[in-house]
Length: 239
Image (cartoon, rainbow, N blue to C red; front, side):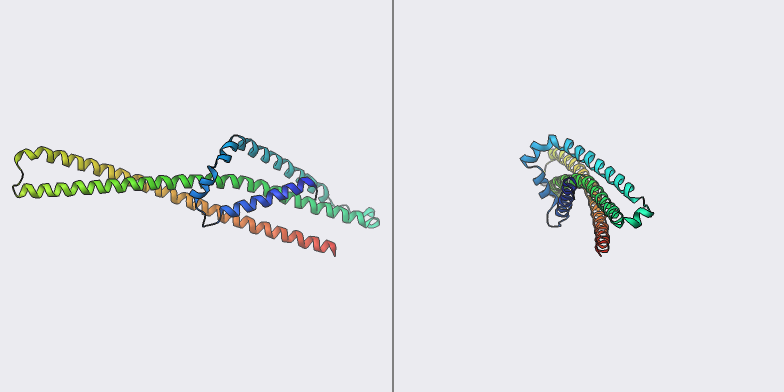
């Protein structure tokens, strides 16, 4: 394996390792977001897009080169040269095997590079949705407590009016109290609607993350099968 393909293979292994870390269930999205918000990432943020695009271009070039090599050595030549020079036939098949290996390495590296960026984006969005949901829940709980307090005061005021312990001039504060209770009830309803919407969006993002994880597991399984096929082909060639 040449130096460039060795670097691509190492890059592929690093991508697989990072994605496996992201799939660990005991590391929450908020913790990953705190890692992404470290100072070193903020300093490298301005170079991230350039590096991402540069890696895509490099991987696409290597993928096209692997396709070209595969098509070049896929053309079988059966003739006198193959019978007279059997080593040339073996050499051609060795080149074909390497071109297939390079094709898989560059293709999976390019695909996982795109998946990695998408997973990081989804983790940040999930962490932001969790923060928004917590803030809305706290706001809704506060509004609920305040509404309950005012409703209790209103109930006590009604009871006092019925018992004749309050003078006629207390009618105006009572009306103001009712207006405040109605206002707080409306705010509570709005907060509950916002909290419900946030939960719906968070559930959709979780389902998307689950689908992405399943797709990633499927790709890992296919990748393992392809590696097993390559190893079987290499064993047969050695025999």
